[in-house]
Length: 462
Ligand code: NAD
Ligand code: UGA
Image (cartoon, rainbow, N blue to C red; front, side):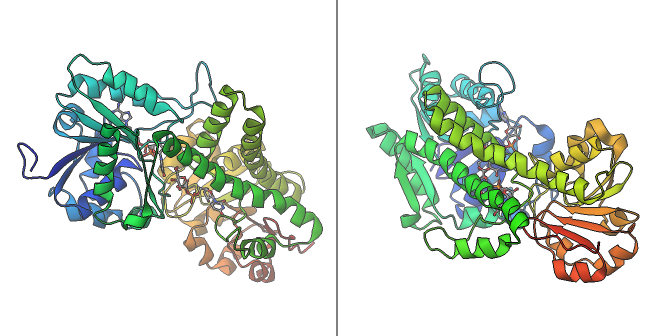
């Protein structure tokens, strides 16, 4: 038992965000023998974790939190106390793209990580395992280890990499039944012991064959590479959409045909208005920066092109709208259906809808945004344009008097709307631009809409 408590082990997690909250809630729910304390400097976030209105919208998460909260799962702002108590400290603070100085616009900003490491050194009174849960540039563990172990208290910190692969919207299932868990450690006796400790935590619910171990650098790099590969698949399919539109090929048929090749597989081949989310672009740019800093310019430009294709796809979506609507959207009311970067989340970080809205505002359109979960974030993202936009959680109200609908997020609710009712309340000719290809295009056309899918011929009444 851990000294001073009845728990077998005390685990802390610094950073109560999209990763720290759900992953620690699952560890606590699955392992009542551990005490898990999640800490953050953001007091309102912690307050929300302690309520029934969690700070992030994630299906099924509240149930998991409720299993363990107050039993062996605690959310707190007392970072120092949690550091002192825990033998294992996960760090899942944010690692955004650097916006200043060397590497600005590409490199990862590690200031939160380094600040956390220094606080750990200051507060710790015993040896600890520090787990990199945030996504970090390859070889960060070396720098962190140097900062942590440059202490005069005789304390040893072992840095382990355990990148997180969950996707938002499916976080609970992803953590509960992961494709794999990866634990990278130094190949020293202390490194191997630390690795075994982390493996033991996951082995409480993850089958042994799904727990991979590697050296630290492979684990750090695998995370960046996995996100780069996933994003690359989306840019690859999106790169074919314009060609489909020119040639009467249908991207849905092409995607299906490609994906049935067992060497390629069907997932992550859905064409779209572009990928969003806090990580794909940031991690791609980080990979580009790392390649450049090792002088690997060909590899850098290869991965940079994935980002460029994504930006192009989003701009192309708006260009198609403007072109279709007689080359002007000025003064026209345009309803954005969906603002979250994907369905089943309220997260809007790097959402393609932000760029779409901004481009439409530049074209002087009247933009009305509807989303079941993301309106608060939309207000923040477009704070500099609040006079040019309208926000409503009612898609029918959004469509009232609109010239066009631009579907940006694949929420199920948008498939199930009464489009006949929507058509009746819109200006004519009425347009729908389906940036996710989730609607029944033929049925919409029959109602009277001019329908512009992605990567499929438009269905026009003129
Ligand atoms: P987030 O911004 O939601 O959460 C990070 C939290 O860390 C914030 O609440 C912030 O207040 C806190 N924090 C920052 N500095 C701190 C400090 N010094 N002390 C205490 N708390 C501090 O970020 P996130 O989406 O959870 O991502 C965290 C990391 O995980 C990133 O590296 C990201 O790339 C990676 N990741 C994210 C996802 C995802 O789906 N969001 C998935 C896999 C990996
Ligand atoms: C992604 C990865 O899937 C996770 O494995 C990873 O842990 C996470 O990034 C991270 O490191 O943050 P996430 O961004 O939450 O997860 O969501 P995804 O399902 O990957 O979707 C990303 C974006 O790509 C969304 O905008 C989505 O709509 C878009 N997308 C996805 C497509 O346009 N087409 C597809 O076929 C799939």
